[in-house]
Length: 213
Image 1 (cartoon, rainbow, N blue to C red):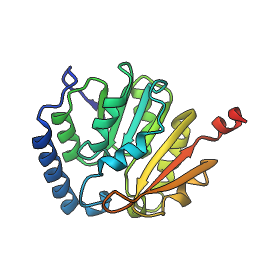
Image 2 (cartoon, rainbow, N blue to C red; image 1 turned 180 degrees about the vertical axis):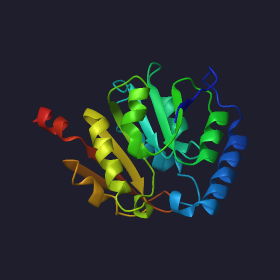
Image 3 (cartoon, rainbow, N blue to C red; image 1 turned 180 degrees about the horizontal axis):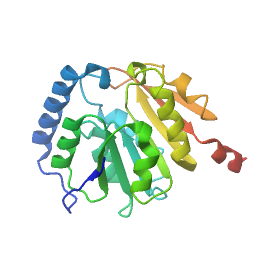
């Protein structure tokens, strides 16, 4: 699917509180409709967002990819941190979320794509790039059909540049068994102040480790 064009300015269309309530309402409605596609009944907390993004080298990042952006809880914080010349590709299978993001975010650095994270290499190529610096995912891997999660992890490893990382937040440890076959190093932590507490995983591409050694 083609990327969805956005308006050419950097501001979201609604003030903070109204935007938060709109996000929560949309998120809850989609959870009720598609509980297997969404990991929690409420959006991620700012504490979880900050924990996931704190180790990103923003000065060196020119292409960031987000799987399952939902209502844009992470999307907003990524855009706030990104370099002016960087690009964020947000990939979601849910057309309602895609339409919501198109309406809410007007930053030209954002490309919203309807499709599967398993097609990430195609979406990156279509954006004019070859590799991504970071990929972030909140997709609930434990509920995906057999083989899909493993395919997403393998395609993510292939699209990352040497030194890039796959950042994953989950409410179970299931994804670790998918990450370890394709990433040489995986670090797991828990953000206890999120509701519910959330596991985080950082997986690095093997070539980066060899270069650093």
